Amino acid sequence: MCGIVGLFLKTERHRPELGRLTAMMLHEMRGRGPDSAGFAMYDAGTPGTTRLTLLSEGREPEWSPIAKGLETVLHAEVTVKSIQDHAVFSTTGDGRTARQWIIDNVPDVDVLSHGEQIELYKSVGDPDLVASRYDLASRAGTHAIAHTRMATESAVTTNGSHPFATGADTCLVHNGSLSNHNQLRLKLEQHGESFQTENDTEVAAGYLSWRIRSGDTIDEALQHALADLDGFYTLAIGIENGFAILRDPIACKPAVVAETDDWVAMSSEYRAIAHLPDVDDASVFEPDPATIYTWSLAS
Amino acid sequence: MNMTATTFDLEESTLRAVNSSLHGANEISYRIVNPRGAHALAAGINSQIEVEIEGSVGYYCAGMNQLGTVRVDGNASTGLAENMMSGLVHITGSATMSAGASGNGGLLVIEGNSGARCGISMKGVDIVVGGNVGHMSAFMGQAGNLVVLGDAAADLGDSCYEPNIFVRGDVESLGADCTEKDLRPEHVDTLTRLLESSGLSADPRDFRRYGSARTLYNFHPDDIDAELAAKED
Image 1 (cartoon, rainbow over the protein chains, first blue to last red):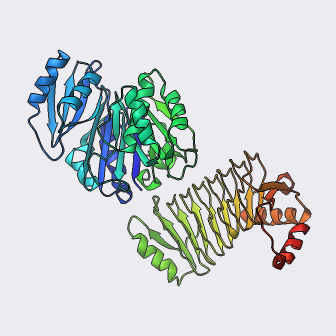
Image 2 (cartoon, chains in turn green, cyan):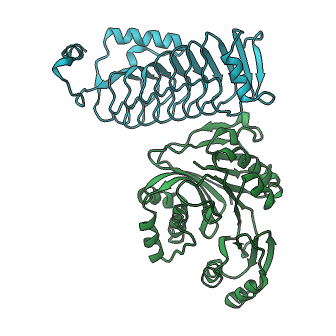
Image 3 (cartoon, each protein chain N blue to C red):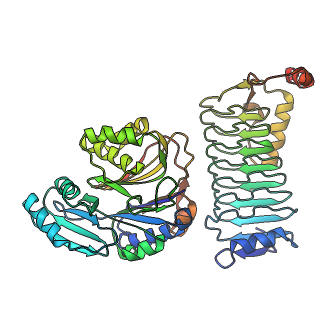
């Protein structure tokens, strides 16, 4: 099953309450995914400063030795903000280099995301508890992607929780299952993508990262994804200053979108959208199969 | 709106309590407010009651409806009126996947669009859609009428048996063994009746009719009567 939600704020109006609205949407999707949850939050960030969200599952490790090690590699200062078993490292050094160094050198730590705009939190447990543990409701920002998971094909672990992010400021949540992820993972590894789990959705995230890194726009990347991803999927995708939705051609995994002048919301079910401000004035529609939907902030 | 109706507010009452009241109905008219996408609302009605729902509903609204009239002022999600047996289900907005799935009888009216697989495995229900229908609509449909005032997406009527499919707009593609058929006077009569019942206006002569090409059928001598009947159609 799984429940997915995305909220993209087109105007300033609701940005201070992005977290509260996302938590409300996530709460409604608990029934679709009671075993684990995660969310990615995007804000304007500081141009030139990369944030890496790191996870050391179930522990609150000494982050400073890791940060010190990273400073040596990046030749740039790394500041640390920890929250429970997650930490956000900020640096003006190269984000991709930092991610790879941690993957290669700090085996107990996962890099959940990196980029100028994104922070990403995930954990096993009731979605409401996950949201409160990582302070979702008090966060502000421009857009959010979140997920509640009901594991069907692998264990209930934080590693299997969504969202997944492998490239800068690019993340996605997925309802469905991919059937060609092993083959695709090998191909992507040859193109320089690195993965931290055996999860099929991480491969989809890696695929988009690879296409975008190779120069595709998000529309082009998703056009390629329609040809290369085999399986069932409804995807909600966060990118730098943007938001996208893609469903496979059979489209058996549900999706509904609502849009007002201020926001675009997407979810597996309407009840996640039903409590958003001004929802009665929203234009509500079901995204078509094999059709790319994108929104971006005017820069 | 019927102001004498018994009103339930789903912000205050539980879904289970509301549905139980509808099942043990001792009133004629009910009104439900604040549905906020709740699932299985007004499912399993088994008497001649009228239910008006103000707002959008979730999955399986009015499923298995028998005798009842359910009107939704809003949109509906997956499985609207699935397996309905009789009565009327009418929504002013759009429905997502599998509206009217397996319906045996009655009339389902969707004023807006319907998503994929509208009328999948329909077994006698009449479905009238004011807008477009998604891909694989009337897939494996057996009987009944699907009337589409807008367009139909890919693979319309795939592997269908004997439903009548009427489309006024464009058909992206026909599914396996589905073919266009003549629109004869009795079909114009059927369309006239269904359009009138649904309150949607269109000229019945603007529709094209689709149905089974019967190339997937395997007949045995025992079925000769059915074969003769099929040739007359």
